[in-house]
Amino acid sequence: GAVVSQHPSRVICKSGTSVKIECRSLDFQATTMFWYRQFPKQSLMLMATSNEGSKATYEQGVEKDKFLINHASLTLSTLTVTSAHPEDSSFYICSARDQVRREETQYFGPGTRLLVL
Amino acid sequence: QKEVEQNSGPLSVPEGAIASLNCTYSDRGSQSFFWYRQYSGKSPELIMSIYSNGDKEDGRFTAQLNKASQYVSLLIRDSQPSDSATYLCAVIGGYSTLTFGKGTMLLVSP
Image: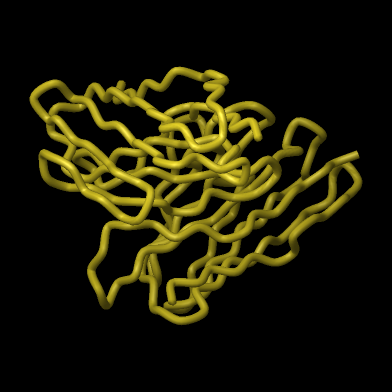
């Protein structure tokens, strides 16, 4: 149980384009999902908390107009990187909490590696 | 600024030895503590969670928590080369957000 998937696993795009990343909880409901970013040899940095049916909560320094988050259902959150630039190249990882079991444990998706040329 | 501190390593141990990974945290109000393992190029996978002072054992892994000292550790018994990875300590503080340490790289040599 507690499986989280992400799609795509890897994406290469041109500078200025937008990229959408999907995060799904496959066998549990998640009213709250989290989006992290990890640069090489760095730790995971929380970007935003995605809340089902309401606006996401962004961490300080993260541009909400650049990183659009939509959490339209209990099993799906999407992160759209708009007008991507090479400095946005990173490993993007989502996580989710099992709402029914009321656990604080976060289960991570496999991550999406973004390369902006 | 809530911080989680870990020695970056690498920590090198021979196969079969006990690996000891340590973590300190700054938020005294933290209540939930986690150890994740992250292989290179992969996302973190949960090893253990611990919420109360003392030890918690799961197979070859033992997590230890001392809230008075704001210290949490992970012991890996009978270390295997497949245990070679970066181990991330993570703490949930007052706002229910997970704060990660930078991780300790463990290298288990055959």
